[in-house]
Length: 81
Image 1 (cartoon, rainbow, N blue to C red):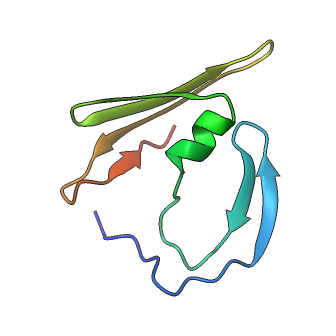
Image 2 (spheres, rainbow, N blue to C red):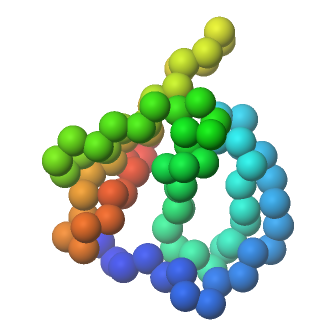
């Protein structure tokens, strides 16, 4: 897995993703970054157990799950659904 490129990336815009809330658009970044603090502000429960992580949120009409594993450089990488 290639190391994500984030140094010097510029934000080109803002938006909203229904399940995550407010997001930034920074096309120079080669990986999606998610803030655990922002997830919890948006009603997610985040669990990290060893080399696995999971963020879940349930509502009236939705159930959102984000799962990931730890990479070789100790970052948690979300699995594509």
